[in-house]
Length: 332
Image (cartoon, rainbow, N blue to C red; front, side, top):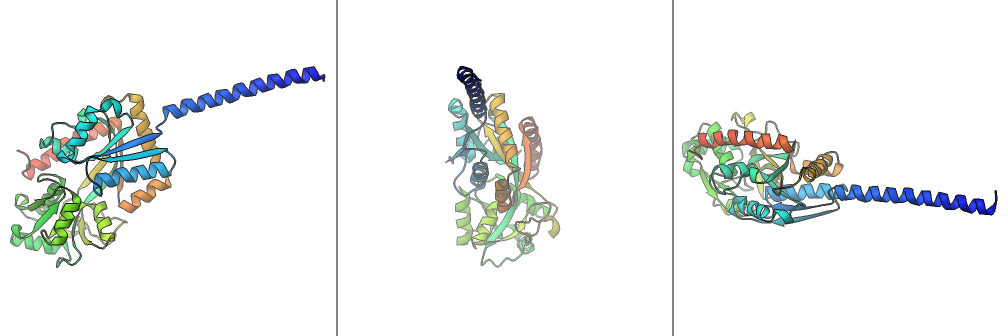
């Protein structure tokens, strides 16, 4: 083969290789541009609460598994979560990378008119986890079982003060009323002491201002691990592997269960493509070891309801939770 022919073939092969490489790079850039690369988590409550733990746990799993390059967090307390919802709506055009965490309270507080918005004013992305309710006492409490608390409540409902990190008529109050109703008490006589945040409610318990704390099971696990409290009972259908020594209300003879779903909402006006990308990355997260580590640590159960399924679920929640709130006297 002549030197000139060899050079010609080399040039052609080089041009072909360059074209293939350029095509691959172009495809790579296009794929990157369409995938979620960063997520900003908006948290409607303070540090250390259930919303905070859910957002930061989800972000941890997404980032450590390599599904997301960058995660950031913003706590915005106020108005029972209404401040963050209003902010997301008002700044929607600048929040296309934002996921706001929320849960059953968005339904409860909308029904009770704590704020004027509802889930319909946002873009529901997916429900992702369920967290049970729990009742805890300080480590040196004379109560060693929930049955003892019930016995005192039945003698004198006003003698048992129950703290919660949210307003009267909120989820912490609702779960307490449901539990004592199942135990044969009058749910409207529950002496619920409302605090502005979970940390304040915990301080009330530790100082002796209240005898019992109504909180999420994942928060209860963290408090128990720190050696500050004992968990008397939880609201799941069965005991959790995260704390197998903690009984359920049902096994103690009280016919009540409760699971607080948690999930994510985007800003209003997100395109179908943007919504689908968020759904896809959250769905992929479930198959990672990093997610299983976070889930097991918090005692969460998986509840994946994306997009239209999530909207239908929220609509049914309005009906079911609304009926329970009326039964317990929280709604007319």
